[in-house]
Image (cartoon, rainbow, N blue to C red; front, top):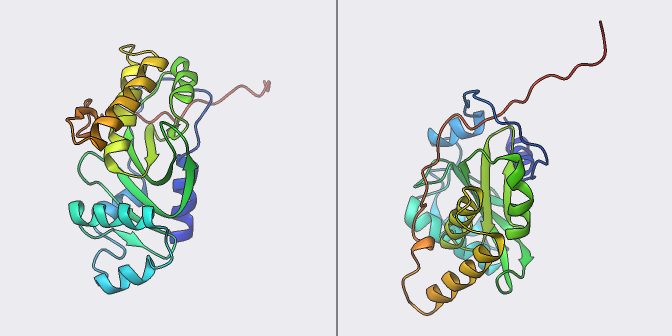
Length: 218
């Protein structure tokens, strides 16, 4: 699969579906995920070339990419528009984009890094997730949930709170309040456990290929 096609696949995976139908179908990893897990692409690219590719990126994107490289190593694939990692730490995959999207919750910043986990979201919880954080996305067919922010800790925070909304532990209002409190704790150098690790375990078998519909034909 070409890099352009992979980018298109990632973009499609970030769009929130409006209808979820739980099923027991097993999830099959995509070609992109397989390739990343095997270290295909530009994983051995020289640091100087990596820096050259990021030269025109905004600072938030460069900072996110450097943090990922320091913690998880070189990206599996990279070009002048983005850097991609496969399975690293708790993540199914990570993309750092070479551009910013303005986001004012809980305070102004820019979203540059999207990170995915396997997760099946019940249909009745989709509206609540949308009200919680517009940078949390769900993709029904792949059985994935992602968060897009500027730092890994913020993505962990968003997904931990999304999980608590889905499981009924928090209301949307409570989750938004908790999000702000945890970010303030990080800035003050205080403990913020929701930003440190996933508090739920991603599972396999979250994909939902849906089912055929009757076309009214005999």
